[in-house]
Amino acid sequence: MNKARWLLCLSSLAAWAADGGGTPTTGTPQASVTNPRREADLTTVSLTPDAVRRLGIATAEVRRQVIAEERLYGGEITPPLAASSPSGGLQLLAPPQTLAELIRIADLQATAEGDVAQAQARLDAAELALKRAERLLAARTGSDRAVEEAQAAHRIARAARDQSASRRALLGPALDASAAGSRWWIRVPVLASDVPGLDPVSAATVTILGNQRRIPVHRVTNAPPTANAATLTLDWYYVVDDPGRDRRPGERVEVRIPALGSTTERLTAPWSAVLHDFHGGQWVYLMKGSNTFTRSRVRVAQVTGSNAVLDSGPPVGSRVVTDGAAELFGVEFGPGK
Image (cartoon, rainbow, N blue to C red; front, side, top):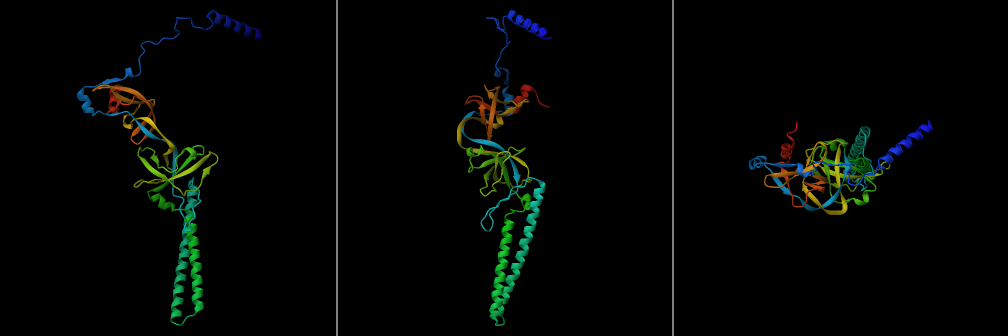
């Protein structure tokens, strides 16, 4: 069996040597491309002046702008879970991750609110007893001892009420009130290695999934210090006011956090000019003449406001189609279904 294998190998080497050792001979191309053309030469659309007018074609210049670098993270909507307590301390309550945790927090909040109500009722009763003792003493039908005992009971009831209120404050705003309102927190797990390069002061922006509107948000300074050792992430919290929006805990959002001190001059074009093909390729239509348009490939790095920041694209000063780009795409490839 081994002898047969050696004979097969020797015959293969002999055939390879007879073929010139696999080295192509000079002047004999091993591959050829017929009808070579650049990508841009294949995508020119010419319209009549009347068609340009009816399509409402509008253009804008490709420019270079100073852009603040941003990093994209996934965030999660959560109820506000930290606030200053009456004693000046901060909450140390980790954000709920499951429905069971939400139910447990809601139960703790209801119990704490009941304790506050009972303590307030005892304080009101002690205050009435103190006033009664003071009136009796003024009418010379009471005693100093009764007033002193009423004052002591009033102080004890006030301390118990303040203690109950402090315990309730540690549990944060009521979950049912947060769900009905428009003020939310967003928890953003940030890699520990990314933290030194992020700006903790400047406003970040939040994008709700399925909506391109970007909402500016600010970081919460008194947030609970939570982290995840398994994923090496630290939790940053942002507060968002979004009137008219019905949000639920656990809803996912996109959060763009500005990088620390990193502003560079980048190539930009209007985001409305960028088109996406079936394979995810990104394109713009360049205006080559008054009625002539050429499709050109671009690569978008990020979207800032109404502008797309390009890693590669047409040169500065080129005019790209902003209004009517989708119609030109349909003219070139036919209407989609």
